[in-house]
Image (cartoon, rainbow, N blue to C red; front, side):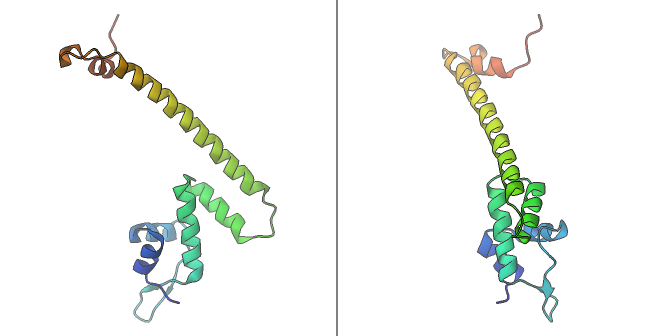
Length: 134
């Protein structure tokens, strides 16, 4: 099975520019070329790009994806390193959720403090403006 870069992009929901970028940074190997010098991809590249896309969709950084791919390429390794990478990422997700929760509380408090009226008296506008100098 030979796929063009467009076919590979459609199959994985990845833009052609992103596929080329992943090739440049080494997440995907340089593909073979057809007689007409077009990129030609197979099942291995499709699987690898699908892995990269799923990892990126889950928020793993490019460095984490690179490390996971390297570990995936040697299936005889202990999966403890994979678990460490995933656990590190989970801690980062939890930190972001805590930050978003605090942001939500603050935004809700500002909205709840609004008593209506004119923009001149708007608590939301006031909260977004520069801090008063005392």
